[in-house]
Amino acid sequence: MKRKTHRNTTFGHFWENGVGCPIGTVPIPRVTKDALLRMKSFDSDNSNPQSSWSKTYKPASSIDDHHFAVVRTTKGTRSYNGASMNINTFTPSVGPMQFSASRMHFQIGNEFIQVGWIVHPQLYHDFNSRIFVFTKSGGNACYNLFCPDGSGMILVRQDLTPGLLAEQKSIDFAIMKDKINGNWWLLMGTSWEEVGFWPSSRFKESSGTMVEWGGEVYSPSPPNPPMGNSHYPKGSPKVDSYVRLITTVDENYNTDKTVKNTERYSDSCYKVRDATETFWSHVGHLIIYGGPGFSKLRGCVNQIENKNPSGASEEDILNQAKMLLTQYEKYKRGFKFDHVWPILKGIEKFANDNMKTPPAFQGEGRDVTSSSSFSINTESSPSPGMNSIDLNMDSEDANFSLSSRPMGLKKAKRKQQSEEQFKQLLEQNDKLIKAITKGTSERNEIQRQKIEVARMKEENKILFADLNSISDPSSRAYVENERKRILEKRAQTNQHEEDGEGS
Image 1: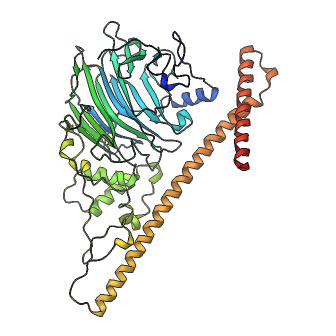
Image 2: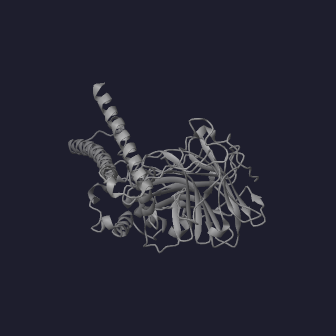
Image 3: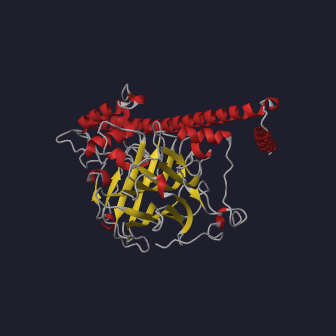
């Protein structure tokens, strides 16, 4: 993997002028007081990006709000001087307090670097997919360039900076250790252009210890957000969210393009497939991943099922899952919808992935999750004396198979009653789906309004500040500029609202 020095022609498509900043300069994001306060709130925050390893080896009773669908190097004695990937980009729908990311996680002892794309409303105040860098080193944790001295990445390019919109179909990322001085470099683009670096002194260890590629989501409360393209992997990089062409670089700077020392990890909410060899061209070692998000109860059910309890009935598994669910603060009183769970578990949001794994995606890497979590049959046995019915199918398609033998009057009545009960179940199913969708939308709107109110309060402090009490000229100039920016923004907002009413 050869890296090239920077020039202002590679990433010019990110900028309106088609070039970026002049050569010899770097872009500096406009940092407001509100942005600095947000960055400070992320320090040592549980919502910060994490690795799947920390979650895997916690006790079974320990559960948190991060979910993963990744392929990662197996634990061992190997050291890494670099790793790379190519990922396609999506914009999954997340709530104001959630994030959804596709990234490469490069572990360096107890510290790490993450690079990729992320949808993070708290960080960026929008719901767009953006390039991000996350660094944990020297006891600090920070996004992009909002880092305390001596912890974050130092930017060297004039036409690329973390935080830009990830509008490309696919992006190349690499982390590489410099042979001469030991600094860690972020490289991007097909020509591996230098973007920025971390001085070697910022990390306690001198080599990478583990690498993982794939998706990570965070939500402080259910439901969990979508990951990747918001769907389960179907088996094709043409439609799936993918990480392809993954490589690692060993301690002697030899590049491994097959990376066979891997294992899959996905928790109860999302799916991942791993293939070191496929019939697809130009994909190398291919990872496909994603999911629509899940309810907490379905995640607990899957966690119990993955333990393969011997002789446990469906009711036993559900009871154990409900006990596990009570470990969440919000569900200490337990699950209150037992009477409709047979309906809820058939809805996509609550259901397992029932797709079978094509032979081309039976990867060679060791599998952490059980086979049932990778290819699960969600068909349930019908009740005694009744036909098996799909509660999500159209009513016109729902027909009971009739026997050729003529029915008696009692059987005809029972059949009619069964059909009426079935129609009622369909109606209840539709009502539940509408109620769940409405409740999620209302919660997201409330969170958005809270963020907007907090922002308005901070702006009002600046607008009503007493300039005569500010003796420092630079501070006074800063407040005056902020006032001007706030007033211009509000004027534009009012103008747009008036234009909207007029149209």
